[in-house]
Image (cartoon, rainbow, N blue to C red; front, side, top):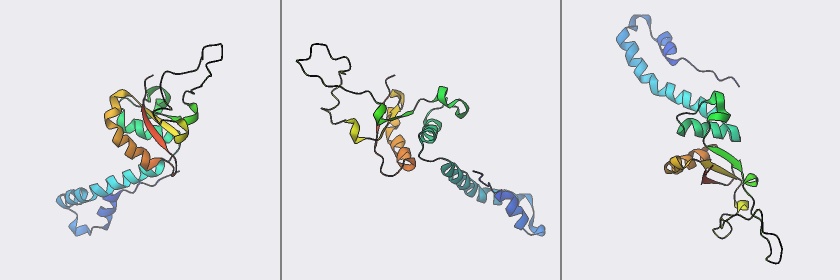
Length: 157
């Protein structure tokens, strides 16, 4: 989608009477228009990104990962979004079964109230970014689809 970026400085110069066109007035108008240009860039950025997984990953990585490059998204992303169905499954076996359970994890997920059915997706962040979990939560809340539930989890691998 094409977004038109208006050049407010040029517009202000065009609308200024010819007799008033001096460098000092141009500098003053530029300083007045700078917040409007910042707001325009912010609005265009927010309109270009939506609740899709790739877009949300891109926004989070651009904000919190300094080594992120959008050109090589797959290789440089550190914050990942995983569907709740793709998280590791925990199988419960009866004691009377002869074989040892292969897929039984050591984590007590169901005892801690972290059942995967509670959430639609998980945001996996590196342990170095756990201090920014509140800012990440606010950003995810802004971009996520309404009604979707998520949890921010530390990525161990």
